[in-house]
Length: 306
View 1 (spheres, one colour):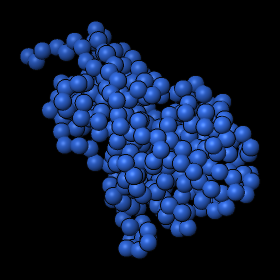
View 2 (tube, helix red, strand yellow; view 1 turned 120 degrees about the horizontal axis):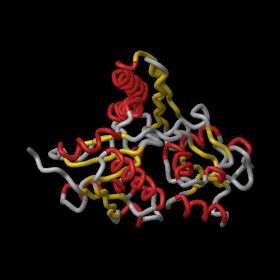
View 3 (cartoon, helix red, strand yellow; view 1 turned 180 degrees about the vertical axis):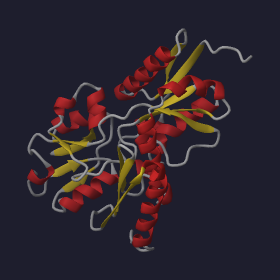
View 4 (tube, helix red, strand yellow; view 1 turned 90 degrees about the vertical axis):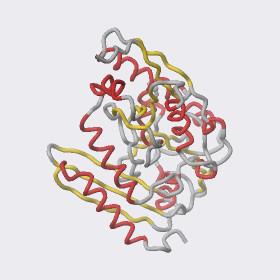
């Protein structure tokens, strides 16, 4: 009989939001496994230390997740907690996704001291974001505004907004909700206004593939509908070679036995935006998303980003 696991460690980034998410995983894990002790270990990641350049220039969103998974593989922690929208499309060798917690609000939040919505911003307004997905969709709707680089955690971005580095910014409603700061959002943007990032609002846990004993501890935390939705959206990314160098958005929604998937790919300047939608049985969700991705790849051709 395999020895009983008495204690494990969860690795996380050090931001307030990352810590809150990891504490939620810890609490659920201990509730599902009475007697298990769970410690949290902060892992310093390069992505948090570079604030003056877009992520695409310094290694992509994987900066946040690769180092956490490396900490798992070299034994600094047993498992790592991630915001799934930051997790690269292809997991590192030896790493597996153990569970997905129930998804939070998927929407983007519009924050501005000068306007009630993106449409209400004055001509020439400055909108701060580090997301190419948001930038492309903003410029598609408002080519007259200027998009400026905004990096940092939620608190840093709010401070920059107060200092009028920009007239508006966008954040994930999920993060604001988890921080108890939903009231700072000027408006929650419906997916029709701003299609969210694939897996936005979902928290996942990764661990070493060769640790089925650990995987068994996390299995009760997996939320089935969230897993269906996230795997569907990530299948769309997979077909499009999705990285943070490409403005891509995707959202899967489940209603009864039916899934509705909406996808988008755009040029960074917002000059071209391609959209796709599929609906069908939940059992076909991943196949539908892959088909949607293939359609957009065909429409993009070889010159889309030229």
